[in-house]
Image 1 (tube, rainbow, N blue to C red):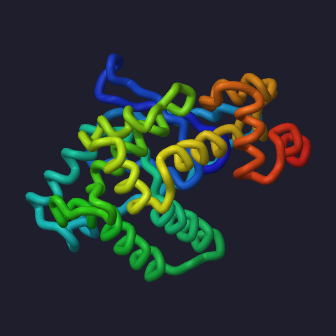
Image 2 (tube, one colour):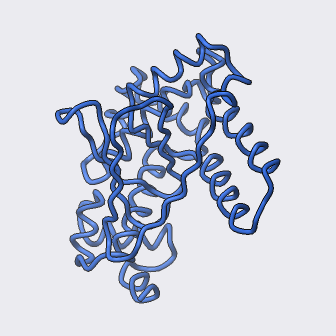
Length: 240
């Protein structure tokens, strides 16, 4: 996906939630789901969506019927399961590009098998841990909470409480798993979202900073320059 998008979905009207995807986010839709997924552009520029379908038969090459049923049940509970996954995002982009130049069926079949293995891998190992002592599910919970609260104050204690870790143990585990501190990771997510607003909308820079969770214009400008290398106003001018 590219451009600024809102994705809405849920089991009923009361449970409908909207998520704003960021670079390398993917939305996993389990087979047999009867609910509706609504994707809406959020900026002035057009949005692009790449979708890829993996057959149930391909999934069965990696897990049995019972394991697949359990896995799909988990996905349905979390639908729409938007998550940060640069590997899967890159693979879908590669398949889309290959399709445009006429890649054959063998390429598509090989890609589908890789994607099936990648999507199912965290669930075939049960309680397997990611590096640093955070399980894949714990890390996904933390990152989802960050993305859903980019415009709100989020403390390290808030994040640590999601996985019942102490503050210091959580910081150590998170950095081991992601290579970044929780504060740095959250700031980069906010800057990614700010860049989309700067490119696609007409809000003032001060308002964009507030929408992305920065305490003031100076904080926003300083953080933006540190990560992007220029001020928000310079970035907007360069994209005009």
